[in-house]
Structures are given as structure tokens and as C-alpha cells.
Image (cartoon, rainbow, N blue to C red; front, side, top):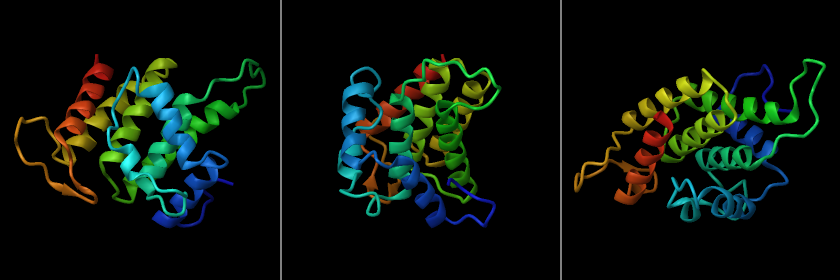
Length: 182
């Protein structure tokens, strides 16, 4: 079960995301990122240091980032769905995107949330989901701008939950955004 019609709190959202991630583990999420995404689209230099051994110890934003990694590394099924129903692949996309929207609606924004947005936008672009990709890249730029994370040389970045954003991570995030915006 994903999110029901009951009131949503951050804990409910995290539980739903964790449920969708299982049997994927934090370690397998990191491995999937390093093998399938990082070599050609590196955007998360600190993901390893933010990941915890279990999903219960992992923060919501990191769990959402891992769900985005799972989405991006999932292959669509080879069987076509002729009944007009949503496939498991499309359902994973919709659940990932709606989880991110719920986190946003609950006022939650962070660097891992921005990185998750970038991966979802990459998924949309690579699978031809337009105008969703066009809308997503604009929302990603607004989310990173709200965090006041800009590649300004030696300018100090605002402290976040795990310290200041490194210049390397800032550059990787903005490079990802620029690539997707083209």
C-alpha cells in the first residue's frame, strides 16, 4: 500500500517510501548509483556519507533520493500494456514523483531532495515524458534557488542539516540542471 487518503505526515511519507524501496537496501541503492548513474551523470558526491545502514535510520530526503535512483535504474517491462492500465514501471514513476510533491507540500526541501528532482527529471527526459520534464526542470531550479545554493566561487553556502554544501556538490548539481535544461 502506498499513501492512503488519511492525513499525511513526514513519518507516513517516509514509511511509504521505505515500503516502496524494499527489498532494495541502502547499500544496493549506493551501488546502483555508483554503477549506473555516477559514471555519466554525477550529481551526488556526498550520497555515501549521508546514507545509513538501514532504511529506518535513513532520513526522508535520502530515502527519496534512493527511490529516485531505483526509478532511474529500473528497466521498463518488455510487454506492452494494451488494457490502458498503468504498468508497474509507470506506477513507480508516479509514486516517486508524488512522494516528492508530498514532501514539497509538507515544506521539506534539501540538497538530497534537489538531487532527487534532478534524477526524476533525467528519467522524464530519457523516457520522453513531456511536458512533465519541462515542468520538472523548472521546479528543480526553483528548489535549489530556495536553498540559496549557487556556484559563486568562494561564497559561503548556508548551513544545512549535515553542514555546508561543498563547492563540488554545488557545481555537480548545477551542471546536472544545465544539462537537463538544454
